[in-house]
Length: 184
Length: 184
DNA sequence: ATAAATCTACCAATAGATAGATAGGTTATA
DNA sequence: TATAACCTATCTATCTATTGGTAGATTTAT
Image (cartoon, rainbow over all chains, first blue to last red; front, side):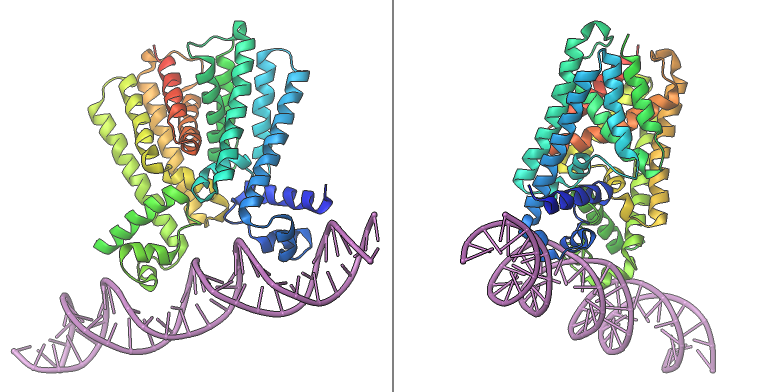
């Protein structure tokens, strides 16, 4: 694949995580990549195409990180610790989860991007559900695996959203403490 | 106070909750209120002034709702139930919490608006902390009141953010179930 | 020489913001 | 009381900058 396209996607992803899709223009993106805006349209005909590509990329990268956890972590506690760590890393450099950011902008997205967004959250929650199911003996909560997965995912998305406002990480740590308290 | 200004604030608030501050223009706001954009600048000299006013308004209205809960609800369970209900109501009509939405756009806000945003979340979490403290006998969690307050607030903000993407309310209900499970 | 990548140059639409005018109401004063 | 001064709320008209997007020429690489 094109090296320039990858670079554009990388720059665009960071920009969206930082200030949203609405505040990303073809011109600033082009400037940051050292080309002209017309050339960005060569790779991404319109903004919807760009948005969809970014979500697909991000989902794939997230999935890869989950696979790494599957490979290297044994018990539920360390798996969930690693899961939380993904969000802590995102919060650094003043960023949000790309899909969390786009969720706020969902009413301005095309149908394809909306569908991809749904898929992202579904995938993350399904992974969580599976982990909880596979380690149910380590778990101590009256909530179903599915509900707990939703609580964890939405809790972390909300935590980075709010933490970024005052530049700390207290809420994400509180979420982690909650998760730990649900594991025996 | 001016009737027109109130109307503008109401329209703008709904618009921001729906699609964000970046996607609200003086012209569309003016159109919806039946005046010209120059007249909007009469009430709100620049966009930062508008943003700050909206946050102040929203914070005040939220505070009023919390006061209502204080007056009418006795035990922790029903208080927290009512607190969750605020967010459920917001989610209807495809909206987000105004401050949750602006939290996503925080990097485009002026310093005053940022400070007001921080205040909003602080206020909400302080109210929650106080409730937990006052009803500690009903509580069964190893987490501190403060941490639990942060978990609840950020959890609900994340829940409406994600729920809106696929038009449901499963995550907010999951968050409510979690909260209930933390109360004896 | 062909295809991929990038450019120049533009377009129509929209953005936030300002200047200056006006009509109508209120207040202060001679 | 009459009138001058001021205030409120709105308008028209305009400015500069930016937006997403397109057509067609040109360069670069295979």
